[in-house]
Image (tube, rainbow over all chains, first blue to last red):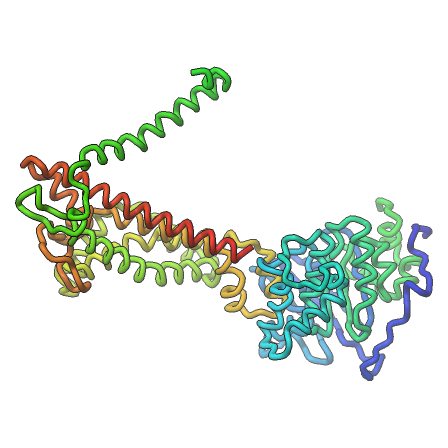
Length: 273
Length: 280
């Protein structure tokens, strides 16, 4: 396995240890036998994995393997799709997310999501950032919050400190960073990124990559991507999905350099099995 | 004819078709204006119907149509947009719902006359309202409703799915997604539908004739409980009279109706620009 860029240097991959005092070993997300079907057709089969708080987990695999479905199962976005049916268990900080009394709106406020297409809301950059906090009844200083999350996503300096510019005037890379800032404004504990760089050029992709890395150390990130280099550069752990099944899950370096399963190796090396 | 040759054969045929369309649109207006020429003045706008053509005015009919348009908008908009939101956002995608939806769509093509018959039975006689402005407004609201529902539903469905998904993913409730993203984005389209529906009802004579609109009332309706008069039925009444001078009155009342519709469309255009500006 000698794909360029997979070799990691210490400074691009600092250890991300939780700083909020929680036990490092307790998984913030625990999936057991998670299955998702769309109108009877299985999209995910018996997925079981744990995610430790503060880690970045990459989910890789060929198109249609269930990456998006897996991410959307974690914040109950799948149930907005007619015919979707989820079985098995997803525990978030020990709480079963699919219990009937759990409000999916609350789940999505704690587990935020950014999509492949950077769909912005009409209005200004500020309007975009303010939407989530306002929906959650945020009573604090929205402008301070906007500045904080825009700075975290590297947009504050791009905008020259003016969040009132029309969101439509941003470049593709800036739009995706605005989507990340918008998600951060709700102060999620977990951020799901669904192929955030799929529509971006290499420079914008690199910026997203370093942004993902610079986000708060207690934030857990699950990133679905087709970009193996991005996965290798940003993540601590990688899961390889194939046809709705979890083939392999482990430390990114091990999985990328020495995959245990031949299917993973074929995918990583671009060989047709 | 030089321009025709430059476009080639298909281009020429299409240019000719466009010219015919233009002529078809302009000619009636020119004829109306020529016929109405001597009659249209301020006195005509505020005057009341008279046996003497020279003294007749369109005041009560104009006030009646303004009342009717206002009532139709006030009744059909909330119900129509509400139903559209239900169909687009809340209704389960079952066969029964789809059947109801297509029934509503077909209702938009039902002749206005039929709504008049329904209105006569339901409001004039059933509710005992008599041939009043209110009965007319309720009847025209029924006529406007399907158009408002169908166009608003389409406008709501055309809001990109990504906008909804992004809003839900930020922890918004269904109501917040609807109120703060979907409805503002759909507002210009909804407004277009409402304008089309109101233009259709403001010009409808048949249903008002069926429920018993008056053509000779010398006072303008001051409340919805007053007797029904309206511009289209006034045009009809005057055009049916053979005495000299009344044809010009009918044409002039027609011009007033057209001017009213023009104002309606311009107001809608201005409002749509503002809504689209706010949504960008």
